[in-house]
Image 1 (cartoon, rainbow, N blue to C red):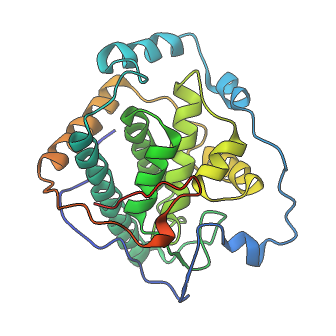
Image 2 (cartoon, rainbow, N blue to C red):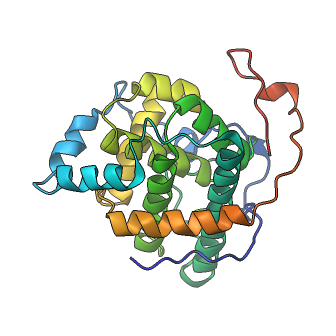
Length: 262
């Protein structure tokens, strides 16, 4: 699949008829889909793993691991990790810019369970770093998540807008699905919901909805993975790290640890 990311810069803020701000737990579902009964249970990973698995899957998975290392051992040093996550943020910002450009051609798109009523109060970069720390997963899964998000952008460009109102939930959903498909060990959805700051029922709904957005196409080829990793590596080499500054008290986690923004 051809890469559509470029190295142009753009703000990750998007224009919307709505104004104001909210936390990540307020979605359009809360306003327009109050009659929708979400399942109060986890969506089992094995359900979609079995549906998409084929004879070549295990060979493909082993190839990814052989070429990139075991996900559990693929740990960067702190400086490299910060640069890598900053590159992910840059790539997501470009994705937002391109999706908004599609909106000028195809229209504003439809509101979905992924679109918040207002722009979440937590910045995208801060939220991504929170997920990286709380999910305790390899950077491999962030690359796969980015590939999944690009599939949404390319496959749903006429109807789905990726912007500041939807990017948090798309990132969360893509990362969750990538971990549950490519890793043998992962937390329960109840834990992931707590880490991400959303309700369990909402996370289950997001997971199911995201699988439909990408048409259950979860397999990533080694060539595709390497292309994205190379691109992110090029972006991270251009990142200049600034001194870390403590965040506001509101960014202290529920476990009492303070987390930092770049």
